[in-house]
Image 1 (cartoon, helix red, strand yellow):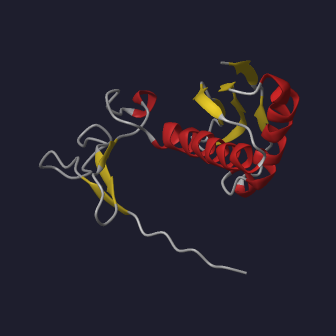
Image 2: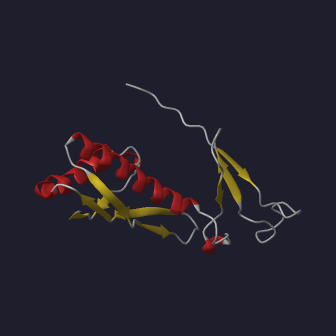
Amino acid sequence: MKIHNYKITTQWTGNKGYGTADYRSYSRNHLISCEGKAPIEGSSDPAFMGDPLRYNPEEMFVSSLSACHMLWYLHLCSSNGITVTEYTDEAQGIMTEEESGSGRFTKVVLHPVVTIAELDKQELALRLHTAANEKCFIANSCNFKVVHEPTIKTA
């Protein structure tokens, strides 16, 4: 078994001079970074007083699932002699908020549209989405099923 460690720095940048004196006195803006990489500007969802021009944790979560699936899928296609020439995913996450303010994701649906070079490998290309989902580290860490509804095209 291999162990991988990830170190991320999250720095709140939203102090408007009053700290968190009250719910409206501060910005939810923050920077997400790790050594040697450009920072990501984050905030909360606009529904929770966040900056709509910045990524929020919920978008980052759905993005992580989408990217992990894509990277495994590309690897599996490469290993199975399938040449992917284009890949786009319009992923959608559904989060339920409780009256208490707590919430959780209940479903994420990936909609990858993949273009491959080999006309005779469309069926295999479609099946590899299931294998990618089974391998995805992020999907395997979720307490809900990650659904994928792929479309395969040929160049």
